Each structure stands twice: as C-alpha cells, then as structure tokens.
Length: 501
Image (tube, rainbow, N blue to C red; front, side, top):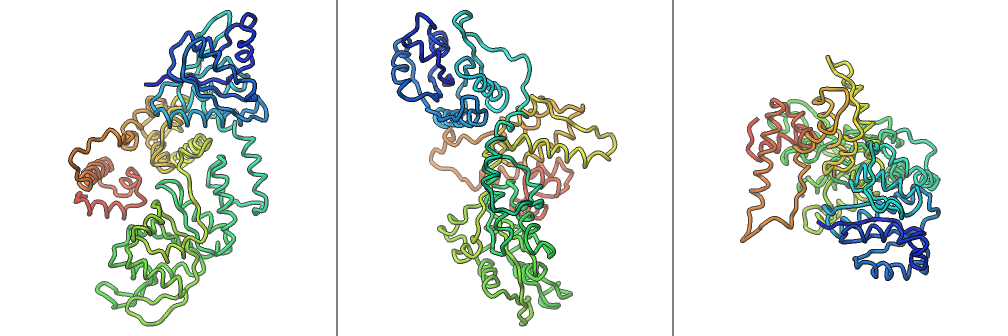
C-alpha cells in the first residue's frame, strides 16, 4: 500500500531554502524527514519562480518522489476553491496510485482555511491521518477528539453555486416543478438548467444515465413545467412489455382482434394524446418494435390492432435509457433513424458519486421523507443519522445511485432500534449490500476461458431467490431491494432465470 503525504506549500517552507537557520526546516521537510512516505504531493499557489529551488533543496535533505500541483486561487482563504483543489488532487492520487493508498494530510503548512478543509475531508469522505508540526514540538499526529459532521462540506461550495445560479440567466424566473430534484452541485445545476430550457418546448428529449440516477423524476418535472402540463403523463417501462404485445400496448386494439381482446382498448399513444409519453428503458425495445414506434413518430397517427382506421395523436416523447444508445446503434441493436428522432435534446444525468456536495442533502431529504411517511406506523420512532454513520455513507461509492440511497435509508430506519442510526447500524446494511463489494476485474482469473452468461445467470438467481425469500414473495418489495423499476420487470427476470415465486 502506497503512503502518500498531501500538503499545501507554505511560506515557511519556501523560506527554509535560504533561511533554515532562522525558520528551521519548515513543516513539509520536517514531516518528510521524520516519517516514511512513498510520495509527496504538494499543492502550491505561489508563482512558479518562487518554488523552483525548493524541491531540489528538499531532495537534498531526503530523497522522495514528489508531485507539485500549481493551484490558481483567487484568495488563500477561499474555502470553495481550496475544497475543489483538494478534492481534485485526492481523486488524481487515487486514480493513479490505487484507491487503497494510505493518505496523510499535513495541517501546518498554508492558511487556516486550508487546514480546515483537510480536517473536514479526513473526517468524512476521504479518511486520512492528520499531521501537525512545529520547530518546537516536532512532527506528531493531530488528534481530533470528535467526529466532524460532513454536513458542513456542501457549504464550502455555496459560493461557486451562487455564481452558477447567476450564470443561469435567461431561464424562467421560477421552476417549482423541479423542486423535487434535490441538488446543489455544479454538475446538477447545469443539467437542471438545460432541462428547464427544454421543458418549454415540445421537442423530444432523451435522458441518459445509470440506473437510479432519477431519469423518471426529470421526465415528470419536464412535463409539469411544459405547456402540456394539464394533459396526461403516461410512463411506459419498455423492458416490461412482451414482444408479442408491443403493438397492442402502444397502439391499442379493437374488440375481437385476438384471443382475450374482449373490448376496445386505447394504446399508450392515444392515452397520452396532448400530453407526454415517457418511454423508460427505450433501449430494451426489440428492433421490430422500434420500426413501428418510428412510423408513429413520423406520421403522428396510430392504427389499433384489428382496425384500419388511422387515429391522429399529438404526443411529446421523453425517452430514457441506462445504455449508451450510440454504441447500440453501432452494434445494430438500435435503429439509427429512431435514435435521431429521439435525441433532439439530450440530458446526461451524472452518477451520485459525481455530484459533489449533493449526497448529504439527499440523505437529509430522504430521511425526512421516510420519517414523515412512517410517522403513523405503530411503534415507529423518528430516526436521526449520527455524524459517524453519515461520514460512512459519504465514503461509500453508491453504485445504485439515488435509488440505492433511498433503499438503504429505508432499511436503516426499519432495522435501527434506537432513535439514532449509528455507524454500526449503517455498516451492517452496507456490508451485506450486493453493490458494496467492488469488482476488481484485473484480479479475476480467466484461464482458458469462462462461460460469462452462466456466471451472470448464477449471480442473478442467487439474488433473485434471496430477495423473494426476504420479502415473503412480495414482488414490489423484492424489486425495490434489487434496484429494479417495478414488479413486472422482476417477473420477467424470475421467468428468464427459472426462479420460482
């Protein structure tokens, strides 16, 4: 495991090159000489001309691999800029040297604001040892006798968020329809800004993003903010429709058109007339169905199964997918002409792990929602999350995104006996969650080959059987546990992998 020391380069460090007899070695050199580190990462907001000789002088004291990162700060006390620089540095270290490298943050060099950010990060999302040093006391581990709640970290971004809001001029002055999208990160500010712009138009929208990132939430907000808001919003899970029922479901049918058609029925296009048709998981549609959907989008007319009369339809299409549709097009699994029909306006929803500062907001919002919805249940005690449990959640990767976060908080509220959800409570839930174990592909032995389909099928059966057992066969609850959109999709999976209900 590589040991990495991160520190801002301070004025005392620079002065030590020429004034060692006056100021001593400086905090950085003290730490490098006393402790053993594999890598020194220095953040510097001084002009390059002032630091040219420092690394040479430092290596004369003790040879160490160094990485100097020049940071342009408008002020050495700007918390937002310091926070962003520190986060970018840590992410670069973990990308280059592995996520399991051992981090140490030096508090002494730099300004108090820089030290405060190191403390917040070490006590929350990036656990690390904290060092402090002085000429008189030497180098020692800084002991922080309490847990610093990570609630405060999103506040560091407040200034940057305010600037971003000012840049969003030209949007409607208010968009209460988007209030349910809880966020403060710059990346989500940009996505919401684009969604608000496109909501006022009737052009098709394609929403791309991993499962659990909130694609349907955005689709509903776009509909409510559009001129079509008083007309129907029809949501369709394309992955849950059997191939032989696609025409009937989308276009409707006449009585007697096929066995079981005992009455006339409108399809999804007719039901959404004048409003919005949300096609969730559009990438799951078979090619034959894609051709028929494309024809309706082109001609704006449907013909019910068993009928010859064309029925005009006026719908706005909002489609969503967790696939990369351009890749699907390149591999002939999705029609190119349909893609360009749908992708007039494209929104890319980021993963929860990419939304800096949003996680703590979402934790509070979801827990408050769970408490309100459970308040009338017999014996329920409104829950709070301890600082240490929150910090554990902030360090978790959340591969299932916001949907996984919701499920975890719901389970924690049920299983925690006391009012406070502790770190132990949360660790038990996360440890046994299937997504908590990262897949280390480089460590997998492939030998002379593997049957990947059988491996995936075996894994799916294990979790399907476990979910059905834990929920007593309740498909809706089991679907939530597995991160599936609804019970119809679960039913398809159960049938596909031969798991009994």
